[in-house]
Every structure is written in C-alpha cells, then in structure tokens.
Length: 240
Image 1: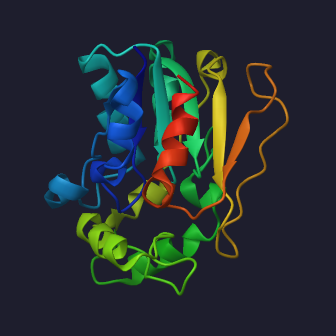
Image 2: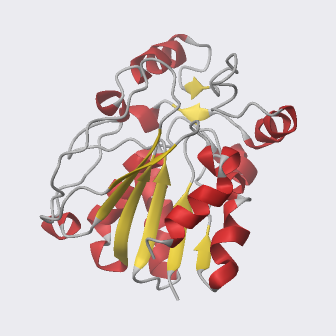
C-alpha cells in the first residue's frame, strides 16, 4: 500500500486536497494531507518566525512520528521548497518526490531565487505595517482567477481556506545537499495555463540519480487539485 503525503502551497491548507483524497485513496492507498504551521486551522500560529525550516519540521516530523516509509511526497507551489528540505533530512523514507507546479530549488536557494517575481511580495511585506505578512494573491480575470480557480462556487470555497503567508518562507534558503537525496526519483508536473512571468523553471534532461527527466503536463491552471482533480489523481496514482 503506497503512502502519499500531499503538501499544500503558500496561503492554502491541507483542505486544498479535498477532491484528491477520495480519488487517490479509492484503491487502498494511504493519503495524508498535513496543514503546515500558520495556515488553515493553525493560522493563529502564523508569525514572523515561521519559515521554511518550520514547514520542513512539520513534514519531517510527520514522516518520523508516523514511521512512514516509501512515501510519494508531493509538494504544490511553494511546497516544492518544503519537500526538497524534507528529502534532505529523511531521504530514506521517500520513494519519490513530485513537484506539482512547484518551486524546484537547488541547494542554498530561496523562493525568491527560484521565482524572482516573489521579490515583489517580500518588498511589499517589509513595507507593510506588520513588516512580515504576505496576504494571498488577488483574484485575476479569467482564465487565471484565484490561483487558477474560476468557477464562482469554487472561488468562494477557496477563499475560506486561504490565510496569510510569512515573508520568512520566501527568504530562508533550502538545505538540499545530502547525496542520498539525489538518489530519490523526481517527477515534475507542470500546469500549462499560467500567467505571464510565472513560467516553470527548466527541468534538466537528466535527474540527479541519472534517470531521464520525468515531466508531465496538465492542461489547466495552478490549483489543479481543484480544477482537474480526476486527471491529477490518476497521474499521481500511476506514480505509486
């Protein structure tokens, strides 16, 4: 029985995977969707001290405390940083890393290094009254909508799960230099409908473990777990 750990991106919570869990778990797979510190039901814990290390702690501790092994570890968006840090800490517990329309860092990089447009968010947060809060991105005209969600009922639901992000998450460099982490196979899933300036980072033709790059595409927008759950669940299921 394959265990999947699905890690949400910035501003979201574990609830973002609500449409994926029953689909992916229908064949007996175990699916865990932790909410990172400071989001969703833990939003009261968000503060300037919360950063990438905090969130890597969340997921690493889950894997160790639950004694999870052979995990397919999926990171959406900002959580590409998180799963990279987790792979560096507990590589022996991870069977595959899946970067779902995600930031894909090298050792020592920050979210701003991976996606330079994030610098705008950092500057705005530092100039704000709090000095650290990064509010959710605003809704855009179709087809971009709210993180790519455009159906009115879905947009209303997504708004209920969003909360602020900490600027430290964008500034803290990832530790991703353990040779054992390089042995983990990687899959990249790119959503092909994206706003200008948010192009996916080029995936090298060969993975660190020597295997050919494994890149898949979904013809949808960023929050694909909401806009295309059947196709995404099938795609993830094929990886376990």
